[in-house]
Picture 1 (cartoon, rainbow over the protein chains, first blue to last red):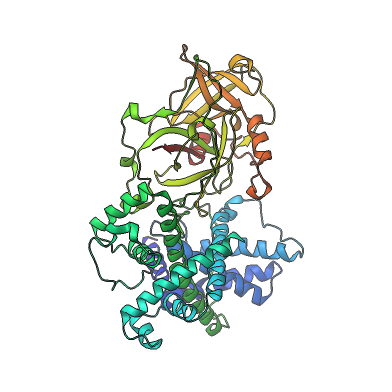
Picture 2 (tube, each protein chain N blue to C red):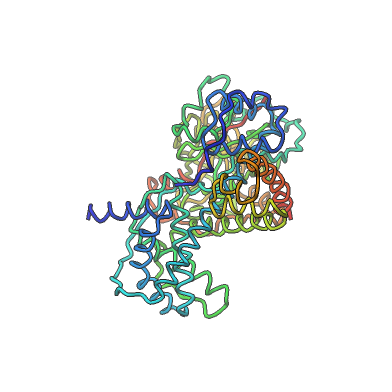
Length: 188
Length: 375
């Protein structure tokens, strides 16, 4: 048991770092159980896959916090989060409300994680909305740096700046502008 | 682990000493280096001084830091999601047959629920409060704890060095107690605890500081409702476990309280000794329970985990006579808040079948120390 826990911790650390192999392993391992449950509870195969992916993103977000430690098995966590996500999604569609398998609230103990995830998504969406409004070259430059993880050297040559320092100056100007727009977006 | 931006930004010692001259884009640069942890100790100290003394700068700087963190974590998450989609496309058909996973009781650590886009400092000043306090007769003493008298360092409670950035810089002037109205950061304390404050922080069970602002108050009843700024903040892992008594309880009802007369949480018990409070004030109870400075704003609960009242003050000559504003007055203030505050008092009582010790254990998450800073 000790060994399997270590393995889980290792996998989780790898997932937190965005490593593909570990993420793939986690994805494959728990896919059948979770998606089967969703399909048993009124979801299509596509629903199941969507919800399951989102649950892994929630796990990823949690794992970004250095203080985060696994308090249960990865599979248990993903299953609980998936149920929660599916429950919300199904109710939103106003189909027959999904009935909980039992009244054990423990299964729904991760409500906070799901809510935090929603708020975060919302925040990112607002940031992206601001980014869409900022205009060129700022939009492409900031996307290249933050979304595509390009280095400033790559950006400097890609965008035709004479040197990295110029590209950096431009980046900071863009960020200052983004902040103004973002602030207005948030106020709305 | 969170991604940091390129760290090839040249280290220029003393650059931010002339912080007044700081243009907006160099503020972004400092914020970026602050997040990456690449500021020198000197620069960091200068920055901290500036943050502590210049509130509008602190506000803007906090915005920059939050936005940059959002961009970084948002970008990383986008890349992760894309990778997942790619994996999903590849695995269109699941191969292995799943094994059964049993659900067991589990608890997630509350640590780090507030992580992510942590707010640094952003000052929303809602106080248009006139400083004339309500008439307080001399026998009535308020229970906020004046730290100048106690000379205690609150800062030693911050055990995580990284957290220091979010800890308040100026010296604490008063402390009080507060307790949660909702898990997402609404809480209540006494008006007199936060009145005239420059800034208010709460300190949660783990010793972490979170900035809070006032969303509403009732000076007469001595109630203030605060909200933690950080949107990711949660008191505990579930909704608030206690409910608020809609009506006054009977004379003699046994009650208990948890508060912060010192840095550590303290339990006390007593009973309702009169249905009306100081000089017959019907919005209050009179209690026989000992209370000390720092316990202003502490919840008064009955044996079933219903909040009956909140401690506001005590009779000066006696040791045990304490006054507490009733939950009814509190509910009235909650109802008067603007709709967009979206605050509803908790409805489900999760404490009523628990032993006292178990109740306290749960309550500790939802009770916090309040630190008030004044210049």
